[in-house]
Length: 299
Ligand SMILES: [Zn+2]
Image (tube, rainbow, N blue to C red):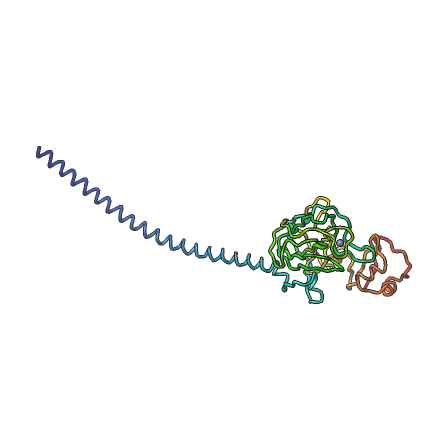
């Protein structure tokens, strides 16, 4: 009995010793592991702090972008005029890629009057059929810059500056659904269509501009299919387009290529040159018939 007891006791002691030794070893390892973990945690904490900094920075940039859309292009935020940049020595880029992938049609109405010359006046936008009370949507994301009334012109109108750098104008509205300086998303309802200002019959007058410079909306948007032609619109200044299509020659001599509907008076207005000056430069008379495709020197 006692032998067995002693043996049992011995066995118990041995087991205990082994267990303690094992525990001691494992606790030592654990201690080491803890140290490593703590060091690693410290690194992770640093990483997290850095990540947090970057996220905060990103948010600040996004907030700034929301406060002043396209801040890199525009220095001022004017709430009074469609084109406050005129005479402000604004330098339009020679070319600029504009992201128009978030385009949302302001209305689904068809085109009732196109961009361009009509009745001896330049039509700076495109007219789209709406019924008074139809919802008008923001074409791109941005911020409401102008919310005004112009009795002889746009009527109730909005100007939105977009994050992509464009500005759009919405005229002849009957009701505003946004306030000045509101931040809007592409496709957000901003107004109701109408017939206010210089307008006969309810329609939406819609303009696209870059730093005040009018852009033909048809160059960006396919109004039949109500989508942007491409995700990126390449803006080119008049000068870089002229160089590209060969209407600026050696020595800076500039030419206008005659299009359908052109007249000497129209061309003189485009370039700010008198008709008689145009005639002298091109050795023609005011009654000369212009040929489509013909080049006319204007400087
Ligand atoms: Zn119009």
